[in-house]
Image (cartoon, rainbow, N blue to C red):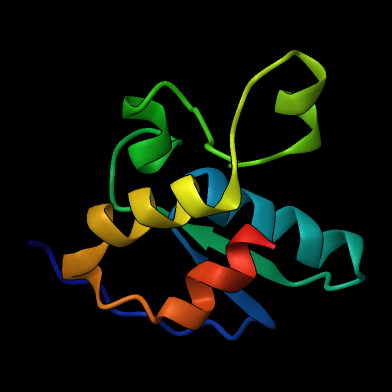
Length: 99
């Protein structure tokens, strides 16, 4: 890993250019933050979102329901609890995401 000297002050520093990072940067910009800096360790924009096809899973969404997808919060929670068990994600955070 290379080392860089850094001497810049910003209002918001966004780490990563995946779906979350770029969304955070755009939202901050739209809310009036003019000094937003996005940094990415890879040589291309997109982070893990680029390698996953850019998909975002939003369980139990009204968009999915409109096209006939059958989903429910209990199944989504079970999936997340089993998938994220090693991430130490608080259960309350999962519940909030699913609301």
